[in-house]
Length: 298
Image (cartoon, rainbow, N blue to C red; front, side):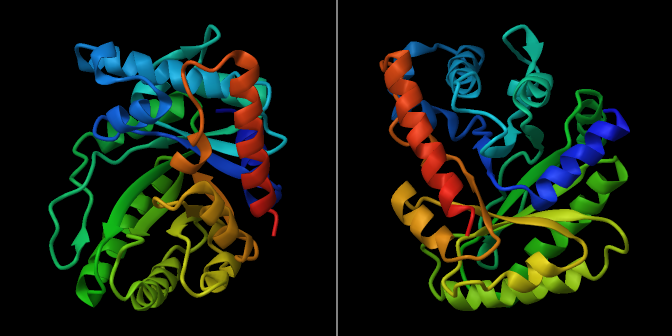
């Protein structure tokens, strides 16, 4: 990616109004996402056909007249989407050059089994090769997800340490990592888990020197809990995941977080259906985008 493009994208992510569209459902979550969209499992007979179906859904979202950089700052892609085209252009190039939407890539390979109240990321043995590929395809940054299911201080520290260790590897490859230690919305003692998580994140931010990361965090029980993270010199932006909350509740919670912006997946695509006409689809998507955009402007 040309340096001018990278700097322009970094400036957008730091300061512009808008939110990040999460279009990165992977193998495990794709059937559910397609089902909500109205495409049932009898529509495909293997993974490749399934990924074609979900690419068609994502392509319909990305090419919609309402999906532009005026309200959407970035979009997170699954690797399979990165390898496909949109209107004859590689997906990442289409997003940036046609829509002025900054492209990110999901790099994690799913979650390990629950241990110490958390699910760490599975190992990513080919991460360096994937990062080189991402850089060659003009990706700006990456995203990787862990999950905190219980208030367990040792488990939470391990999650954050793994995220930042991998984040530093991503920074070394010339990309901006989105650190995502999700707190499950059904976590008992969610507020306590979030307070401990914040402290662990702040400690790790202080190890970054001049490098930058983004943070993707569950909408917190204590409003504006993550203000210190947002104001940290090493943080580009703090974004919120919807985590299973319906769009209306996600937006309500987000609107109370000053400076935090959305990075929604299910809440963005809620109400979209394969059988809608182009007009119906664009109207539904435009309404979703506008509501999430407004909640992200507080």
